[in-house]
Length: 108
Length: 112
Image 1 (cartoon, each protein chain N blue to C red):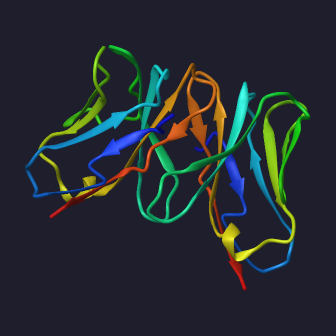
Image 2 (cartoon, chains in turn yellow, orange):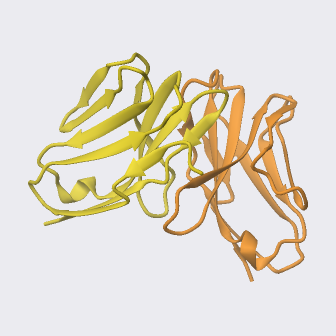
């Protein structure tokens, strides 16, 4: 059983559309990270959220940490083909727990 | 500030040989984590180490796999007597104090 559930697993959209990826758990985390991974590469850190209710923006990406620090969402506005990749969330407790990932494909 | 370094990037071994994967954490980071990833899948935790200590090895297979993070030098993930099922990408991440991890580029192991 996965401690962090990510949804959706796969997402294929057209350039210019908006999308939201969810990362849910019944456990409380001290912090939560979002990563993006491209084929053949290691995951690249996008953001760390620490405080319940925290919202962080990175250009067209908006990250939110749930009030109870159990869940998080990643919203992408006006997706571009360069956003294509595997998005992973990771929650920190005594160690790091990863979601299974959301594979995003943005078609031009 | 150099990022997490892993070498080799690609490693080919025949069944029964040993594979040795190296990870140099970011400067100032004393926590190292190893993960395994199969194609089209997420990351599977293997082991968490601090300098000279194994903190959590709950994700490591009981046989053939070992990891160390000595006082000096890189962290090493060792796989003895490799089998085809060991073929995967192995990622190392480092952290200054267990707060946020930074990943290396990975080692892709192919067992023939």
